Image (cartoon, rainbow, N blue to C red; front, side):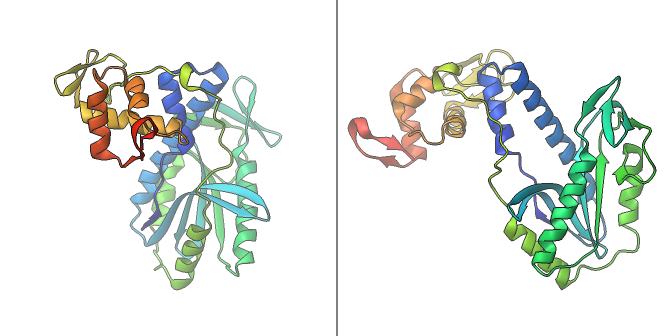
Length: 301
């Protein structure tokens, strides 16, 4: 049973919009790429855990705090009388392990997920003990990408390689044990302690004037959108969408980028660019938002 589904991080959603409407620096682009790749890897592992036949309680993407220290768990599974939690990595290519460090060939040191795993395991233990909860914990790093290879890996590393994942999932389904009240209480506790707003976001600064205006195609993200009758048509892929839906989608993007700003007819007209009249914009907003104020002070919420 999935108690906590994974949702796309706000940080990733925001960076996707900035990438679409501006030119990210090479540093920000690399960070965005790594974030997206990591999220894609986590989704792949979620599919596998959701296919388990044994009774289990699944909690994805937990952000927890103990002793003023915040830590993250990619995937936690209460199953067969244990807590299994996983640090999921979507690394690809050839790596090697040397002196407790991880390197990508030929000799590029990368963050060692085993250190992060050990830290998270210690903090999770502290958190559970502080609430009087005791349950065996088994922590592993999952390398989800099939193209990943690690050379010189000691046999005792808490690591599951791509070729071992299938057997690991089969093992979890062997000799299933029913979920008891103790495990349900632990799952409920972790859910209640989950921090919804991450303090670790790294969003580059941006301003309205820097961003490209216009309605983008909901299918291919192109700005080559024109209004034909009551439809928006993409000149790149020929996809069509109602003007109303396209405007509302664009307003939602604006609200993600500028959550503190008020939505007005003039602003949305400028943001969308291709809708021919402000009157049309106002009609769409009036039907879908609540109008607050009058005249030049009016806005929608």
